[in-house]
Length: 122
Image 1 (cartoon, rainbow, N blue to C red):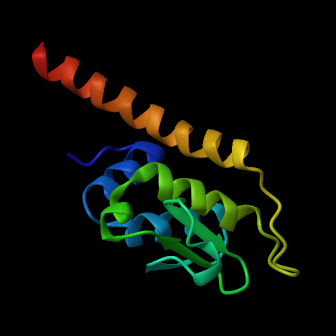
Image 2 (cartoon, rainbow, N blue to C red; image 1 turned 90 degrees about the horizontal axis):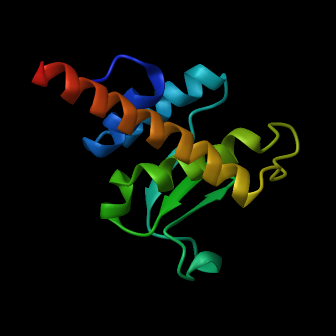
């Protein structure tokens, strides 16, 4: 089920094994470079985080291949990419803002799925 509006569609793409396409569409929408996506955390980030963003090489890292398909992680890290300044690559986003950014997409996806289910039951 592909969802028509932007945010639900992005979550749908991630859940359906296409995080690369989701990142491409996000980058186009927000007019930023497409970040790279890599499985495996960088050495200095081997703690319990599921993902991290490195502005130096514009890369989103995820802990393992399962994490590639967790919308919250991909969207949270994309927010950090979005908020890093292109010129100096300094991280400008806070964790709370990244969480809210990701949850906005997820909530809109959940609402779209609920609406679609209600319409199919009528």
